[in-house]
Length: 277
Image (cartoon, rainbow, N blue to C red; front, side, top):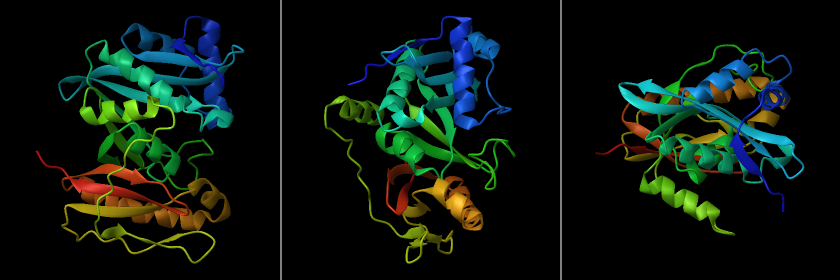
């Protein structure tokens, strides 16, 4: 079993290695990479700039975030997290987030935010199911057009994850993940579909978005492998973006939150629930 060491970057060579890993992840020449200077300054000012090294001393993952005021409250914004492709189902991403949580909690910060693409089922599974984040905000084309191959063609719509760090929900999910062979419970309530999918073709197709529902819980379908879908049929991927944008933008601005996520194949499903209290 590989042993990973997670700690803050300490030398200019380590900061530069983080930039290299950003480019390995989002493309060479990625214009929105975070420079060594910003990584270091953010760390000095209470942010997190930390890497994960394997037992051979190779940088295999990193997490970066900034701490500042949002709406009058000190919060942490997790800006980037990356894990090398061969380790993306190893639990390292979860360990990096847990490290980040412990670090900012030690500074008295109790809320963390970050963004993710709602069409990326792997990220939704980690963020919502495994880490226990919820989503109450949706931003259309948040980062505009970028030069990353991961983004081209379907825009940069993003969900904003809210991680309530000291909450029982988060603590229970992390505790379940740390137990060998354990998986966190997914209390997936029944509800009508605000967006369904047909699965009788090579790739699932979105149904008609329904923004008229008033139920306490509603379901929203997405394709489980949007990366392959983008390669095979970009037009269909765009159709999924437009359909999911309609339902997420409506319900998340109408008092609902993303509460759970159930991963497919070939279709995965979000559970949206009305916020109470």
